[in-house]
Image 1: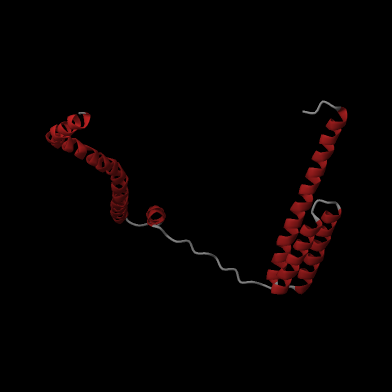
Image 2: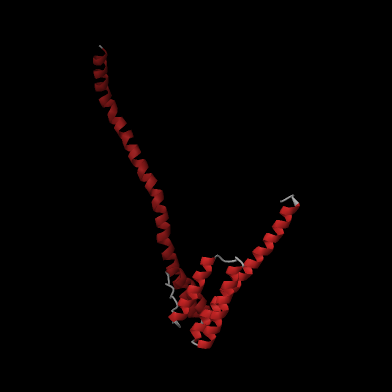
Length: 182
């Protein structure tokens, strides 16, 4: 926290400027969305009015230094490209249905639809069984890494088996050792 009077004033001024800059940027974003809506509608007069309003907001923000000069130029250029491109057909992206979402979505649909109780229970039981089978391989996969360290321990035991054989070889090694010493 500032303890000098001038710094306290400067903090207050900076806060006011920050809020004002946020207002400029927010209004520019809103104006751009309205410009796009006007372009989508196809009304030439609405497009021209929205474009003029957008350009004036961007220029005013650049003059007040809420936006950098080049940022303002880029935004105006983008608006011009949107107008030149014209109305666009919006394609919605289809979501991929996974097993997990399919099993979750099916009980909701079954609960919403007025269907006899017996088929709903059979469906729920079948879905629960599918979910259990889906979860079972996952559980086995989780267990598999636990088995891998056990497999690594097994080779460690094999040298222990060699130790059993090693005493037979050790006397030969001991016989060589005294020969080297003498």
